[in-house]
Picture 1 (tube, rainbow, N blue to C red):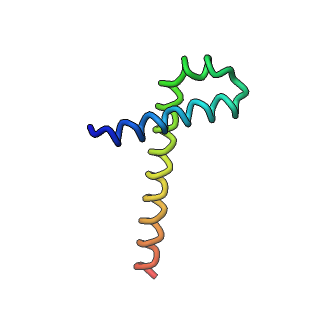
Picture 2: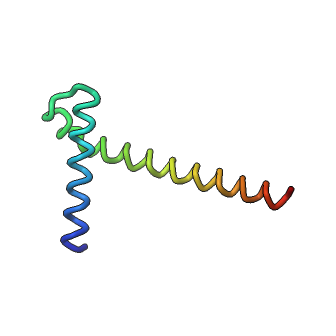
Length: 67
């Protein structure tokens, strides 16, 4: 893994932790302790978003062909 990829991943994780602490009114210490959970939940949410976007796109594409 390149240094650039590691830096981007670290910045994204840190951003998620800080954003979660601010949105949920948690202390930064609590958010850091829960950082693995926060990152996994964000990844799962992103996966579902992409999955449903593909399902909707394919559904619309199929509907256009059928009409």
